[in-house]
Length: 166
Ligand code: NI
Image (cartoon, rainbow, N blue to C red; front, side, top):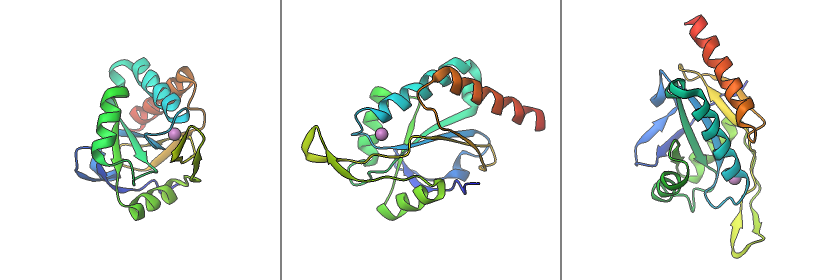
């Protein structure tokens, strides 16, 4: 079981934790805005899965936590997400706060050279999507973040389960 906790800054500059979204599910993905393939594919998959849920998607807050806070300031994350994946709110913070969030979700990264940008770097990362419940507790994670229909099905199941026990 993951702790699933974080204490970060959202892309509008507000201090947030998992408790800030109480009452709604949280769909959380870790990545970085310079990511060329994995993040765009996963963020597109999650967007399509949420689209497929229709109104029920309103019960879920999609969050994108950076593993590259040195480049991903709130402003950078906001403009990247508003332009490309507007359902998502970006979260960033100090290196220490990001490292604590990563440890809490057992997210791993390994910073290395970016083959397409000699001046830059890449941060390959765990590509799971984590689901926290309306009370902020960790519920499950999706290992496959490239299949929107499968993810939509999984999310629907979790929403139905929660409605049944509420
Ligand atoms: Ni990525």
